[in-house]
Length: 279
Image (tube, rainbow, N blue to C red):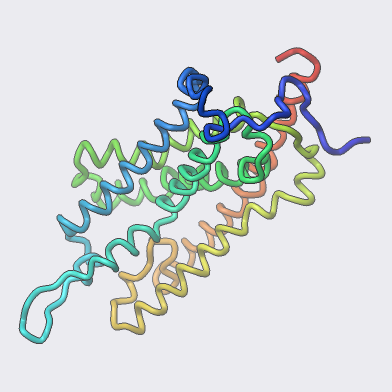
């Protein structure tokens, strides 16, 4: 039995990207997929850049950011803007959204033959939306409830609410829907084979992120920063919340393996229906 499901229905063989077909740029303008990718990308970049710039201009009162303000030998107050930017870019939320934005830009450039490219292949696309799904579930399941518990949410402005909901909920949902239901797919592994060979690969990035985060915490602690203020998220504070780390790690591993397999199953079923002319 063939364990790779190939979709040969309506997929063009000739490369058709925005650069090789400048005369046909009108086709891109008419494509809702192109505008979907463009709008989601612009919103992601806007919210991320706004966050970083705002934090550099109006430094948050949070202890972490306050540690980036110091005095030189002359008593002048200075701000370490590099650390502010680096701290903001170290959030899993920001990284997963920027990864999605990069994917969307690439997919928009190759709008009509996205199925032919490695970076928009089935597995690559699944893993990107898995990271966004992880962002959505961890935020809504752990981080947002913590914000409610400690009353932090009361300080959020309307814009911050919109920003939070887009990066943590709306953006991920729209991205998942696009990949699962509308992404052109050339081939996809059958579910059992994917689970056995590829599902665990979705954990590469989360594991790498964890190693990076702990290394960053160690370096910051050695530099004199308060340890409690070096953890990017509460569940990465192994000193005070090791149990929360275990819960989060198990949750992320379960999300990665389970949902990547489920997403693969959904796409394989979609391709199967397409090949039989029922979709």
